[in-house]
Length: 203
Image 1 (tube, rainbow, N blue to C red):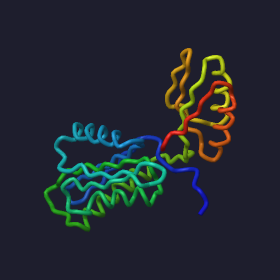
Image 2: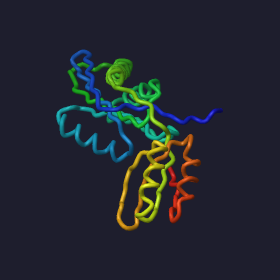
Image 3: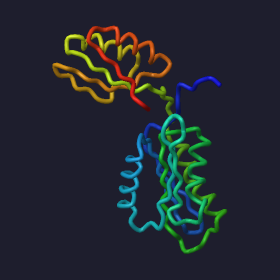
Image 4: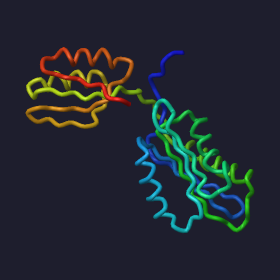
């Protein structure tokens, strides 16, 4: 199997609304990076919609796809979180959270009705999202002395690395992500500069 070097995610928040027999379902799709992002987005929505009866959600994080969760938040088991996750997966997205806020309209929809509502609201929100392809990165920590900063930053720019953190004092440290296809070649080039140490970090 060929190694996958890119993944698809969304660039910004989108929302969509679906109504069925008085119940209102508002879907919010977010680009996220960590499970902490999930907690903060849920807290904000619970403040924004204090009268909603359910805040059901699903997310998938990471390029290997192993970090995911589907939460029914009190709806019948499998009627909310799973259909939301199913839409994220059928769009082949990752680093995405979708929360669907439900206001109850007085009529029970039954499990098939709920599945349809959560699925449709999620699909509509994701359909409006701008999807982008990103490189899968090798995270690195580069340590070096100030005089070679120009060479180090030049190579990182050339490698299309994303800089996540930098501390450029007398002794410098940069945390970056180098696109996987050419990460090893650039790590080697960086290591050849005098006084530079490059540590590969776990994804």
